[in-house]
Image (cartoon, rainbow, N blue to C red; front, side):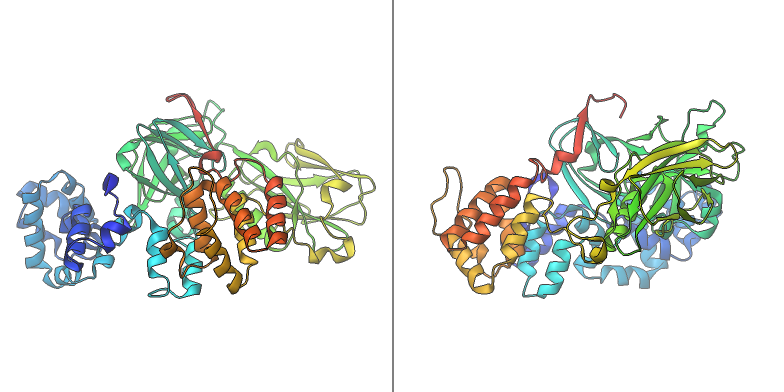
Length: 539
């Protein structure tokens, strides 16, 4: 059991059967009742005063019971307690909240340790393969394999193999680590986390991230990207706070320091985490770094463009991109950065060409959640060679963004204007996509032949055969994973092409060769989106 992680081999086949399984997992989790059930106890314990009287001094008891969040305040001192003190709390809870304690103790192991298992179980694909056909049907299995643990979060997973300082190019998140570490991270939802009153008190200043780290002690600092323009000398950066979200609500702390595009938090704890600016007491609000995004609609008449003016929030830009792709729009690739704006400012589109713009003016609004509908729709019958567009702030009459759109910029690939709604770019984006799409072309008979061929063909030196027992009863999703696991990405493609030719699927083999030649090298590398910089230098 390496690094404290619970593996499938350790958990499913421990010596001694199910009792040993339970002991193995309990040993790995290393916790106490009051630690395991922290969130439930904070939310549900009643008569906190009686609990405190049984174990705390009069002064400690008074300071806790007068606080509205009694159990939360009690738990602020629990982590410093030894086992004897935690046992006293457990006994006090049994006497004052017996029904709750019995309920929690009676929970199934996987319910009781849900959060620990989500964060610490390794080799999840093997767990899924074990459950496939026994507990999970094919649809459930595929949904879990191809989607996310939380349907609102698209998770990214990276293993950083050494100490250093790293930045993700897709999210601008930065990590300073003191040892090898595995990080799982994705965007969360401010709208889901903030209450109505909190939205009035605080201005969202960054994406909200959900981050999990193993081992947590290897993380020295996290660099959270923000979209505030802090160049103005009169801006009070003490109004910027790091928000954490747990089951009992939001907690705040000051960042260790603030940089032009990041706020740095040293020795972080991880839950949903992001940056907020205090609105109520701020007299001077900072301007906001902005992006202008432009899309051509494939389902509207003639040339119809969708324009978005948003904070420089890559989570919002990604959500807009995903929504436009659902309607088969195309991104008009133009410089997206515009001049910083204050919330509440109004802008309008200007052009020497004949265009129709709806609405005529656009207010740059402070919203915790930006709607995915276009901020503006721009229509023209014909580009006439080119279309010059500029975005102008109404109050100052200053141009904040400009671009020139040419016919090639808005050409709908693989279609004519009369059939714009039928576009679909079929080209695979990654080597894995190409491999998976190829395997999915095989019918059930040829899938069996393909798996048999994998076990009976000559392999290049250094390649090991995938055990036949692992290939049996697996679908193409699992076969693709096994190929990548045993031969790495490029080797997996090479072996698959060889096996396809061995079962006379030469057309598919040729297509896979052609598709993979179009895909840039490194597209499938987990660390390809990470750049390393000197530890301690600005991220």
